[in-house]
Length: 253
Length: 253
DNA sequence: CGAACCCGTCCAACAGTCTTGGACGCATGC
DNA sequence: GCATGCGTCCAAGACTGTTGGACGGGTTCG
Figure 1 (spheres, rainbow over the protein chains, first blue to last red):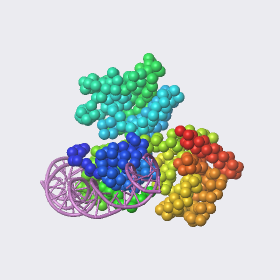
Figure 2: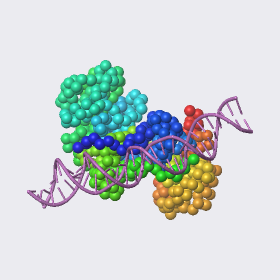
Figure 3: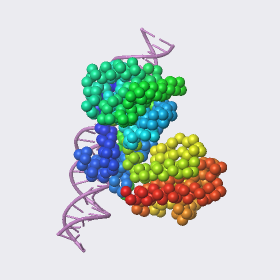
């Protein structure tokens, strides 16, 4: 299916690494890039000018930066996702109803990608993280997605990405994760109680289409505000409801 | 400065064309891509699997789609732009004050890129167009940007991109454009009166930093609502004001 | 003022990567 | 069961990417 055994084109990998460095550094010159990636200066130059020519980089007076063509292609990819087309409205509503941060995530390459986020009235200030690839096992949305994946695929993801600890509460044992996923399957929603960051709670529910997970929707906020009945009943119900609405809309369009 | 005389790496160009096709088609198989770009099937396969490996494409049961890594890199590039960091607030306010569509644009490769847009209460429904590269000569923001560019650069842009007519009112003559840009320079803002689309008016002002244009801010809406005193005085004043505030903030940070 | 040094750009020759046709396995549909 | 479509894989050759070094322009230092 997705073998990926053959070695990939070296030039593409190099180009990607250069772009990644430009992204991290926020802009760099030819010599900079050459040093950082241990390339001959001339090679770096060829790559950078090629990247510029196709719009993936911009030469701003000797400093190369990532070009906005990435934003173009990325926005396009996002807007083609069904769950994005129909789900934003529900995420907005979740944010309004709870006052917290509501998010939409999709699975990709065994990780999760935030497609859309909306901050409610009291929501904590956060960087958008849109497009960022994150580990699934330490997030409510992520665990919700995992819970709806076939067992085989989950094993593969764990093998590849591992179960990295983010806090003391992060699930780092396979068995524990399996038990958790089963619980989630029964409940219909996932809970993240400080497994990503201390004091941060999150509740997420999966969205499926024809039996395949296409993403998840979640609400997160500080422990101080998400507890008791609100943590056990109210928010889970709202999240499940939102996910359900999106699921239905996604399935018939 | 930006020579770009040397021929770019063929493999990068091919990869880009494949991504572009995936973007346009919304997903395609190996044979599809091979046919469309007149490549041997095996070549298409090598490229696609390489693109997948670096996260630029996703293989969804035989159908390759554009990966969300583009969104990741694109969002990152956007959020690094100073004008974006400090300008969104003002664009939001413009949208609220006017009720119309307010936009932020930056120049790149001789074209304009929408970085951010906000719809006011009565604003027309539009696709976001975030990240999209558009011609400068037929837009208020675009003309505002041009008016603040050195003459030489403007000539080069016209040479490269031409002055394509979008409506009967589009400026297609060099002399006419020069006169218009001079007028804009004096007024401090640019007007687009149906030059992009019939019945659509737009008012934009440039944002500079150390004498270099870093973008423009604009408000657009239907002729029916943007006319008379509102067209001549009110909105220009608001737009100039917003651009001015952004300019000051951008210059001292 | 000149020398030394940094940068980005360009070039031509070589090494090796990309390209390619074809074989293979697997579905699907006749 | 056969034909046709797909995606995948492979090994050999051809061409392209890679490379060290040269060049010119800018800046800094003595």
